[in-house]
Length: 185
Figure 1 (cartoon, rainbow, N blue to C red):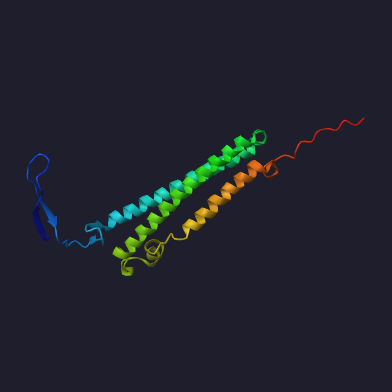
Figure 2 (cartoon, rainbow, N blue to C red; figure 1 turned 45 degrees about the horizontal axis):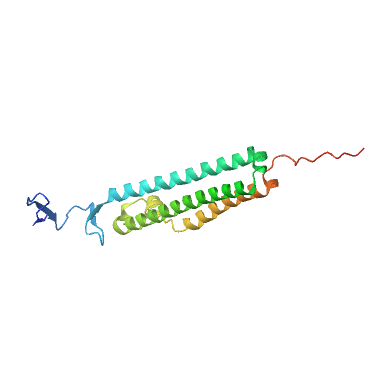
């Protein structure tokens, strides 16, 4: 490995430090990433991809758990929801809207990062002859560009169902509405 020595400026303690900075790396597992000026290992990029995929899984599981809990509470406690005043309903809608928006933005950011990591992997290490065709098609060529539309659809649909359940009670009620008995004699 070829290296070049350079002297660093005096640190805060007044001592001179010498460091070696690599000018060329002969290891094929390192690739100099354009613009970074530093090598990146293939395993480091794969680890980053897997960590972001784990983050995406967590965000989806969190979204689904909260939405199922909200739907269950609206269904089980439909009489209590019926008695909520307009201000309480607006607060509930605002809370659900805020949660859905925050989760959607986090998912969009994670998918954007995941797509960028896969693009970087394809550019640096994505030579087809290195992979089995199924792995190449499903990992190396993976693209997550359409996920933003999917997230917008799923989160809007979930929010719409909560709106309907809060403001149009017959949508969620599991019993026929109670009628007042008439006093005819």
